[in-house]
Image (cartoon, rainbow, N blue to C red):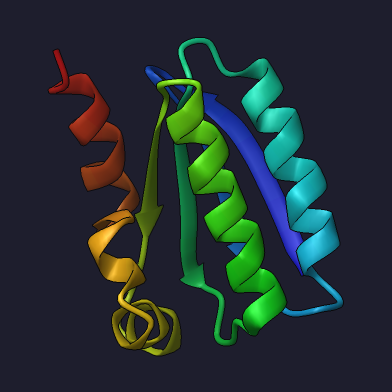
Length: 115
């Protein structure tokens, strides 16, 4: 798994490439923690369009991140393509809790439109 992060005002973006599984989840957790620490305000976009597989450990990292971001009154948007992760969120009813967009541009624009 490869994780790239950068600032794209008004948000911090992480793009994940590869499987989000027991092997990759710890790396993502570290990258998310660093991004959360650096983000001010806490507007976080996680681009998962290049993640073909996510197991329960990877899903746990996403849920823990969402909980943390909400606790500190931040905002998290997941960028999802069609496929496994969107389906996983739907069958676990987590799609009701995560804010999602279809593209990175849409996600970053959503922060620009927030008041």
